[in-house]
Amino acid sequence: MSRLRFGAFIAPHHAIGQNPTVALQRDLEFVEHLDRLDFDEVWIGEHHSAGSEIIGSPEIFIAAAAERTKRIKLGTGVTSLSYHNPLWVADRLVLLDHLTRGRVMLGVGPGSLPTDSAMIGLNPTECRELLDENLDIVVRLLNGESVTATTRTHTLVDAQLQLRPYSHPCFDIVVAGVASPTGPRLAGKHGLGLLSIGATLTPEGYDALGHHFGIMEERAAEYGTAVDRDQWRLVCPMHIAETEEQAQRDVRFGLGEWIDYFGKVAAFPHFGSGGAAMDDMIKYMNHSGMGIIGTPAQARELIDKLAAQSGGFGSMLIMNADWADPAATKRSFELIAQQVAPHFQGQSQPLLDAAARAGQKRDGYNEAQHAAIAHMTKKYEDELAAKA
Image (tube, rainbow, N blue to C red; front, top):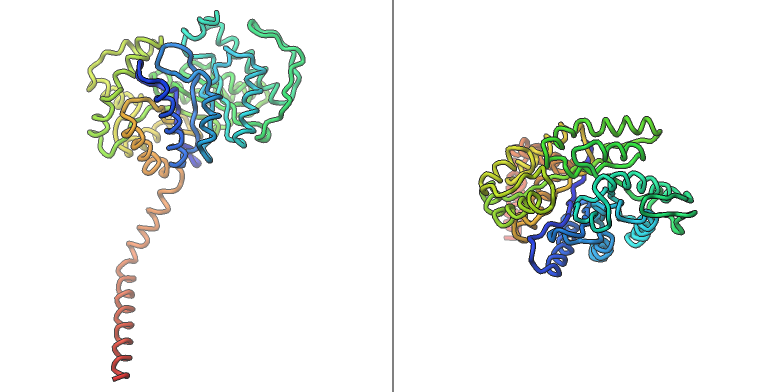
């Protein structure tokens, strides 16, 4: 596997009922933290209901985050493309591409919360059909085409973008996938990347990893496009500490609320009903491969397993949720940056090799050092003797 990029996937998830203004500022500060730690990318979600995931426009959040950061790339994770006029989605992302000098990325999906789509009169099936239609329009617009099209929600007449992207030929575009082949099929059709949000969250998602790129390749061959494993991003929840015991103590802060939200509020049936004992939640998380609550070594082991299961991918995204308090969460990402990412980016082994080489030759060099010290000491003593 080539240099693996590391990043974060921020829905975000916050305990329901806390001060949203403070929570949003904490999210912005967290992106700054990731930038300082040399993470490669961060993805920001779009949600409009259910009370916990409180960013309604990832584009606006990215504009604010871009002014606070220097090099980290910023993606919409995802823009719920079925909710929007595809012309304005393309237009806004091109604007962000210029404002960020090429640091923006577009992730698209049908929308994850049924309570979101219901407010604009769409059901989940219609959202998935609209995703296909609207993505085709967005790709054509970004390719410089003039588009005339009618969908069930919008009409475009000779629609064109007045700006070309800052990135050449375009910024990264990825399609979200959970367990079904929908995301891989669309990514292959258009030659785009894949954002596997459900890579570990369900047994079906983990088991399907080995097939997803095959689906992408099959569709790419049919439509005459090309797909690249480097544009495949996997999302996995993790909380890392110096010891497994410390990590388990940390997540008692908010893991239960996270599982209850997805099991009881957000209409994600694969999370179950929640309500399990905390020790059982932690045990299931680690033993199922759904995520890691443990040490850097355990995180490295899971990433190795994901690489083997998938056949290789380009970015490892850590799902950021308030499992632990803010200080412990920041420390978790520090440990990932210091002790996990370098293992997969070709930075750890050269240093280990250098230390090993130095250790093997230490005795000889040590003798030479002592000889040099003795030589200079003797030389100085001779100089003093000559002066006397």
